[in-house]
Amino acid sequence: MNSYVTLTNSTAEIVVLRSRFISYVYHIESEEEASEILTALRKKYYDATHVCYAYVADVAGNVTKSSDDGEPSSTAGAPILSVINGGGYRQVLIAVVRYFGGTKLGVGGLVKTYTDSAIAAVNASEKITYTLSEVYSAETDYNTFGKISNAVTRNGGRITDIEYSDKVRFTLAYPTPGNVLKELINLTGGKTEFINRGNRYEIYRM
Image (tube, rainbow, N blue to C red; front, side, top):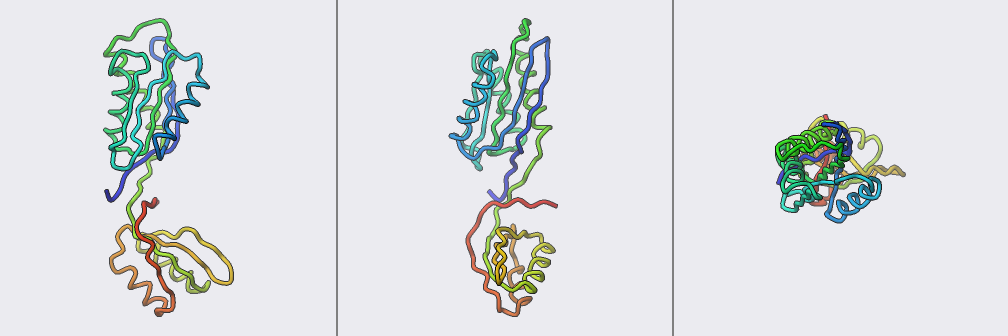
């Protein structure tokens, strides 16, 4: 997978026939993290009628789980999961806390409301794209680093992990390196060594 989209943490609330639906989006990186978040939510909303959820915990979309938490089967967890999968989001947990308001919504009403609740929280989130990139580390003098930084930015890459001392140590990443590395070697006259550190997912912001 060359890239995937995740979401930042957010919350939203809707009220339907006096029932409160408080929805949360969390960026997660494991099932264990999802479990910890859900435990904390249940503790915080100990008096809630239901805490329903769904998540996709991995990048490929294979590690998924959903729960109706006492609502009729497939009226809560499945709709929430459909919102996640429909947006193609990965490493995302969406939980919806319900306080029952005294009026039953019916199967169709529940599906619609849990879907709307999940969408409301997603709309309050920022979408972030991670792109698989080639990563290099390097060390150079301050003047050369300025030239490298400009070239990296111009070619759509990014520089991270910068350490300043007598020289500048840094990491650079490119989603599609192509001839960029050759340009950097030429730019530095071959005096800066770029060490390949393999691939990892990086965020690129315009």
